[in-house]
Image 1 (tube, one colour):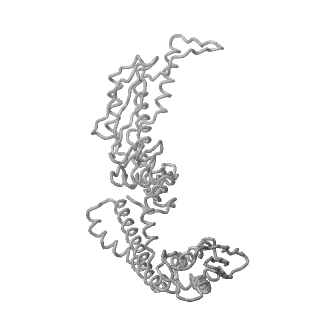
Image 2 (cartoon, one colour; image 1 turned 135 degrees about the vertical axis):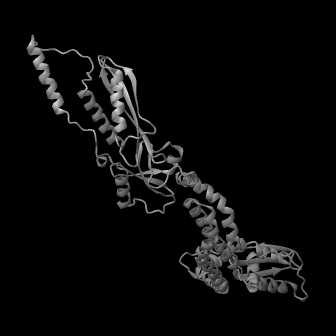
Image 3 (cartoon, helix red, strand yellow; image 1 turned 180 degrees about the vertical axis):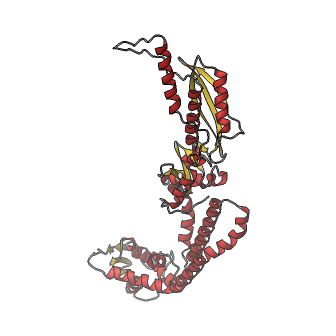
Length: 443
């Protein structure tokens, strides 16, 4: 990695002088000669120039009557025409025959690689002090990122109540300080071109990452919006996409619910933000209802009053809002009454209270001889029906009625322990269970 830095680092004035030879640019001017033997002087002058460049071997210069023939081997193809351009600028040259050829690179000859490696090592040694200083500066920024962020976040945390927003601001500050340290390292090390490339490429890289991680970015943004809106809190009972449970944890990726069967359900935050959320804990009161049918021969008002009395005496049913017993519809064989009542869902379980209230109303209707017939249907007796007359009928009906009444227990008071809500049990299960996602909670 240091070698890559050294390749792009600045060099000394001596190196800049050497690099000028790398370009081998030709200056358009006439090189005058004062020697009497002009052809010999031209040969010596061109030979010295080619030798001093260090880019040619096997140099053989022949001049006759101002005509120059150049034979040499260049290190690479880009230097082949340079001797001809130099010779044309020498005074007394009337023509140039360029027989310069490029050197064939032998992959098994490591001399070229050795020279390049030595050159890189020399450059690395020259810029090593600035690189070490840059590393020290970057390390200082890196280790001071968290302490500086903690100092900045103290007044911010007093204003922002959301853990999610505080977490995002904290991470953004740490990232900014680390990037600033990296930029300072590149500037001190002389790698300004890399620094500019990193800054200019950030937008393109962000666009590519945005398309590649679209779902992750969507969940992240949804987490911010959920943290700002707060449609629910930890330990709230909610229903999302058909899943009902207690909120155990909310992370940057998703929300973890523990349902009433003890299962962990992880829902992506994007689905939560775009979906419908039903919060059962925001209002502790919950309404329950069920339908019970009585026969057409029954006194409807009496049935309603008896059902209402059961509701008012039940310990789990709230007085405000008050319960209701309404005629819902007329069935084929029954008049259907719909029972409405409210309970405190944090103390009592709705399904348990509904079951208990229904049982008590049925018991009351049976004791008051309020019929609750089944739907009308055709009944076939293959063996016929026994016909009773006189006192036998009354005696059999009395026995049947007494049997039914004796089977019905006289229960009016119900222990609230049997109706206790499962809410606390599920919360305990959620706190005792292993967290499937080790990410930090945000709300």
